[in-house]
Image (cartoon, rainbow, N blue to C red):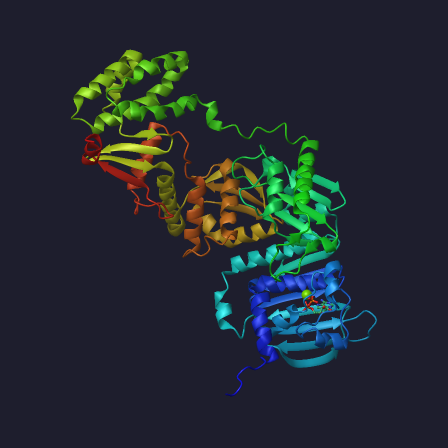
Length: 618
Ligand code: ADP
Ligand code: MG
């Protein structure tokens, strides 16, 4: 039988390898930036068109390449960075695999210009899909320029698989920021479609972080420093009160390389214990220097995980250094995050209402004998609470069980004995009161066939969502003019995003006065958004967009409406006045699709009298 195994031609092998190295434009950005850093550049420019889909160019002022090297660098396993396996354990460069350029050249049009300092002339090379198209001497400045055009031109499936520009752009910015943060001694600039998005002059670490994440970052940073035998640690952590809802400001760098580590993240969270609200994420920018032989970075090129020799010791060092940093700056004692704002209201007794349902269905049990002692010890100021919170539950029971009058009267009688005024008011109100809020979560309302139980948060999401959509499409939303313009700080990338959404947001009622480098000035807001909520709403929207969750939905308006409805809707745990409850019920059922929230979750359920009867017949 004839043999069938063949060696793959180089360009095919390169294309296959490219699948691993280059997943999206951001992977190219990472490789080119890292090569420029390895080439000892002090000035690196990143130029993009269409989120890297049309052009990714990196220009550096590094050491450049000789004529021979400039051809060789496109070969697979061609690297100047290691010579033997042992070199892997004393690595001081980002690259070492010699795969990136071969991979990129296999799936794009690449134009490279490079010149070494001591040479008169440089060289200009064009490679398309692994094929050398041209090579000429050229007059060039010192350093290297790599232009990568038409990424995935020969793999349409890959190209089609790319996400929206916003998402791809976000990935690129992530990579750019990671490299820039690790190297404040290099001047980085980034341009997208002709406009400058970042200009980061040579600076110290703190200034670099501030330049990337906008001016307001400065006040939230607390320095951290620790020198031990196994690690030198320096960097910054965010004061707890500035914690975010997402993890977008959490960075570990090990030997100038961005890494991810769930384990080390846990160490930081442990240091913040007791200082953060539930689910809040502290910012951290931590730089670890460890002897190269104590880590194993010989992993997949696109992975950012890393193996440490002594992870447990690192954990302990990190945790105590961060704790110390927070303590030293007196961050800890002034905080009181665990306080629930609801505790400030008379409704603090509200949790006790949980006892009521059992009381009401168990006719052999006399609840008020118990309750009386509790109630009388709690001061008379609780009576207002009792009116709004207690009454509804048995009143609704009354509505649901009109027939079984005996039990009802028994209970009302008992309650009457506790506070006689309550009963009278109750009787009057019974005529008008149509909704009851329970557990600050659901609104119950009697209907002809029984009752409806509405989830207040989801219902409100639906109401707001439809309202926003209508406002955006009919474009006649009214704005409230602010007395003083509101300046909100964002990173340049976030500002770019807001610009993209400007029109839709203006249709909603936002009035933008100015877009500065790190802030936006707003002079008008939609009626539904209060001044204090504005920054939260925009923050949430940007987070949603950057996470790419909402960009995939069918339109930008829909995206905005969903995100804003989510952040503005009343939360579970919010007390609603009777009027608010009624409005909500009324508005919900005036919606086009009242049955589900914008996220397709049920907004209400109904229970018929028969359902209730069945429950009682057991
Ligand atoms: P690696 O970085 O793993 O060595 P690459 O494929 O990224 O592999 O690059 C191959 C080689 O090309 C590098 O080892 C380096 O010698 C050279 N090179 C790449 N980019 C540059 C650059 N911007 N300046 C100078 N030399 C470069
Ligand atoms: Mg490289």
